[in-house]
Amino acid sequence: MREEDVKFGDLLRRIRTDCGFTQQKMAEKIDLSIRQYQNLEANAQLPGYGVLKSIVEQLHVNPRELFFRKEDVPSPRLEEVQHLITRCSDQQLDMLGAMIKVILSSNENNR
Image (cartoon, rainbow, N blue to C red; front, side, top):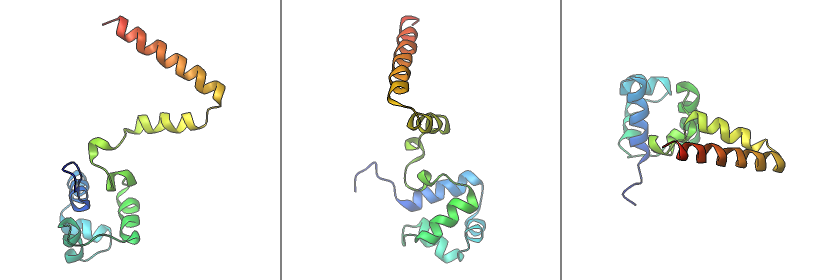
């Protein structure tokens, strides 16, 4: 495993602490026994689809947070812009690209 790889249990622990939950409370929220939950955080077992779905639904977690380190998860604003871009025509993408280049070059000139 590469050094920058993060184990699922570490990500789950971060989500739990970000939510301010104890292991017991987290286990209750996602309908697991405390032992099952502790095994997940200890990387002794991997979750099935049902557990992943519970985490996302019960804790209102972005699914990307379950698979990527916090610093690797795009910001909600970036995700919104990416979603809007997928709706653009080729002509709109060309105009958007030109606008972004102008904005970035004006910022560089103001430094």
